Picture 1 (cartoon, helix red, strand yellow):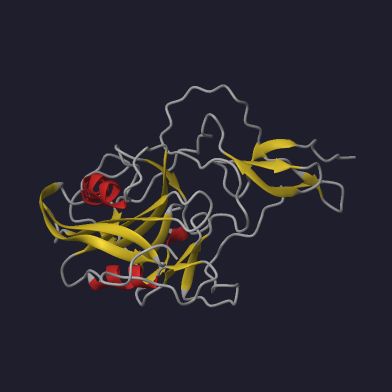
Picture 2 (cartoon, one colour):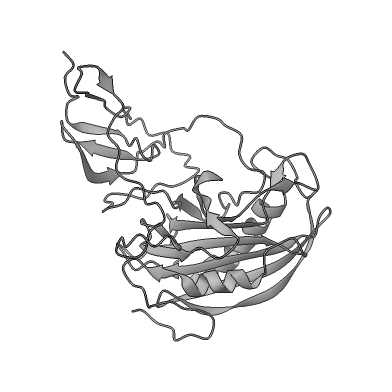
Length: 306
């Protein structure tokens, strides 16, 4: 006869880069950051994926993070620590037939309206307490990349190195382990990495657009996001192959927890086949605090904390 595993910290089955408390019979809402990040299985990555920044330690959130309260530390990508804390795999519980079944998982934060009304026009980022509007031509990014919030529909053959590219990406992350809290400084420090990650080299060291040949700053300034005072920087990037594109780094304080800065990266292809660059502004204006259907933002909107 199978018995339930003892209480303890185990790898979270819904988000294996964190640990979650198992009380002996069910998962609780308590999570923590392992001292040593749990490695993920090696797998091919999409060719165009804004990855970790060299200057800011970021915690990946994505649109499929577990719904509910999250306690404990925020996971930091690219940690170099050699902490020896043991990380146990997720426990399994016996099924009604006596055989062990997969471990219980919490419901994912699939697209839903504020308050759980079932409105499929938003994607929820529970960790940062915000929702993103799903515009025409865009979709939930979870199926394309576990870290993506939104992506454009469809793929195409990359004009440079072999691979499949998408014409638009949106990523949302939490800035951690940085003494810098100024949205302006954080956005200005991130934009070069955002451009390189989107249009220079991918995770497989390929160059889908044969590299970046230049850039131009086409916008920057204060912006209200979900009623919070933020800052953005936007570049027009030219590439050796293909039409290039636009990248934007947007930073604003979270309205939940310790109010850590939230970094949102945008990348959209230029040219007739890319989405309108105005989609970036429309998405920014449509970002809301979870449970708030009215407080948006945008350039020129009233700034300041809610």
